[in-house]
Image (cartoon, rainbow over all chains, first blue to last red; front, side, top):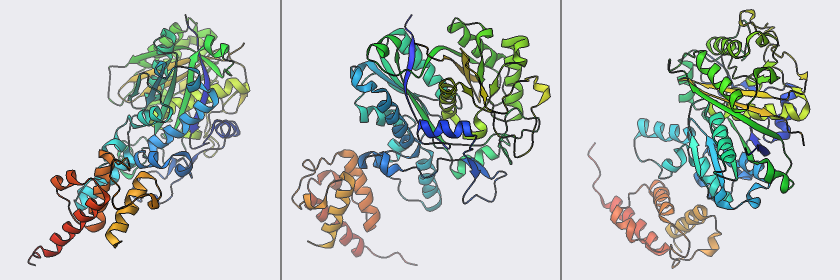
Length: 405
Length: 87
């Protein structure tokens, strides 16, 4: 069977706008979660993780700037980094490269602005509103920039969008449907409307996002993008491309349970299917980059799912959620977390589950996960999982290995 | 060149990311690669700027920069001539 490897990566995130900065800040524990500037007074929380000082002028051409709103702009910038690192576009026929991105919130910065104008003052809507708002605009704009003519589409599965996108791209390269793919996710949802909508669900942390803590009190909303270039191992090697990691399995499931409440059966099934797809046993897994949102329900259910798949080993398995640093960027989170996992392989260092210091928190003992990484930990796992579990019970898990030539 | 013409050229230059010096009054939209999406975007910007409405039918007839200038001037005249609402 065709082996699939990552040969390029790019990102625009709250903890770095290129892979080197992301990695440096990830392992230095420098958080991207900050007090909001111009915080609306009627929110119950005060922090978000935003991409500070994003230089749209530098990343986008004048014609791209006319169409691309913030989310698509992140996609363009992150994809260009991945293309440059991998030299993927020059290596394959344009119609044999796929673009599969995740994006769950579309062009909210434009949509909210135009809606506010229309509903409060009346009048006309800008004619570029439709192309700016459509969630697939990022995919289209990236395909246009690089003249990629293969299968191209956008997946929306809420907070699992990015992981679903990468998994599907992996399957398409593995099956030979395409030679290569650009895949990942992008989101820029942090409008007043979006913040208020999340506030009303009462799952956003009024303090610090601290996944798996006994006193955890919610997630922190974020934005950003991470995009990968993937291709078959054989062709990557034959053209001398640098291989960052190997994707070996992908598992999906649906809870068929509740529109917001998670259920352990679904996440457990997705993890098991990712392992089965990788022809691997649970005992081979040395690290899980967990979905770990920091909400009471997610972390409890995710822990239960890990116990179901790993049995007694769940207690000693190295686990962290990196959302305490980059926040929860909705569909883009899974892509950022795969990047964190790849960086862990590259550095032989597992990233800490950040967010505990400020509140002096302890790991929730009822989760029975005794190896939540409270500090970076030197390790060279041969297999890792990166999990995303979305509202509505849509689950996606990637299994990845470091690449050893 | 009058002010409306200068405004039109500035808007087209911005829309197409070309220097205004390259745009003449007799430049056609085809020459300037102004496509249908550019056309509606330009119309929107003009309507906002001059607080006018260019009729849909008229919009389709605009083929050159000069057509655009004339269309705006006509719309501005009509707006000025229109009776003021009673208050």
